[in-house]
Image (cartoon, rainbow, N blue to C red):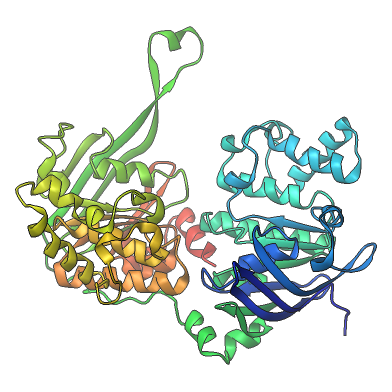
Length: 534
């Protein structure tokens, strides 16, 4: 058997005496791709970070034998000075969110060049040219020009490519990739995986991929280790584990694909429309170059001539990549951005006057992508969920609001018996899935007819995603709610949508029933989106 590049034995990690990783063992051979899979809180990220001692205030024990270029070492017994020679040189890391991992004050070219100067001893001009070549190797167009760009001037996919270039600058033997595609569109996600696979094969390096995305594991990894509550409960070849999972938790993860449980639209029966749009147009002002910019502004067209209808009790799925116009269309639907064309909600149109639009705003509510940032950290659950009542039914006092708040929370599966002191808790005291349930309860508090769901499950683990989608399906059946569902996940579209529209560069390129769009797409862009689903 090939001698392992990395052999981890009895790895234990604790914080303030509380164990979070309980004596796990795993190994990676040279050139191998191992996926460490589990839900949030399973310990997979701290496991990877602990190998380079990047976890603060953690007590780490065990052995991590690494066959480095300068001979075998135990990573967990090295001094900080010795580890600096390995970080970025022999072992590199790609972090989950490149926007926060990259320095906003320096161009991406300078950040890559800095690594080459510190680790390889290159001079400034040589490191600059090498950085441009690395960006070119990762598939960034116009690498010389992009090397002068700051992180905020790049798209999500370009930022991730720049981080990959930085990680590969010193040709590491082992790459640690922590959820490297989570925040990306499906097509960009596929491109990044193909890029990593190509670079891995070319350089012969090993990859430890940390992820909760089982589709990604199927496509990328050679072996998989499944982690639950700080224990590795199963590991083996990807094909073997997926074909015949031995542990109940592994089976639970594999069975977490969203399932369809909807009331289908009645045949040959016209349902009343909750929202209608015709020739909807959304623009943003942009400065004009030259002296013309002194007197007037130009316009960027984010949505061009979109027409759609959302019947009562039905879901309209809105698909497209970042920059396609999905969010701009949602802002117009919520009355949060001016628009041209016709747009009505429950037979009424937005006027732009907050007093006049108050009743319309009650009819359409929103659930955002990230429940942690959409819930105020300074407000209790009672204040968050009851906020809509204070605005739309200000005659109710606290004693009258509280039972309705409790009922809304119970409707989304959160009760006082399960969460003692529920109403007085704050968002940080709940998990991601529980926070999203609180966000849904807040939206339902004023009894809306339409919910705008902006990627409501993309920030959640697969098992929690399935639970939230089941909750949304249940609420739709019971309340005849309509949904405008914005997502790039074809599996979520299959589970939730009755009708689908596909947007590209602000234009609706295809619209139709779920079967028409997913099973028999006509437009090349739609076919690309469907095919890119991992």
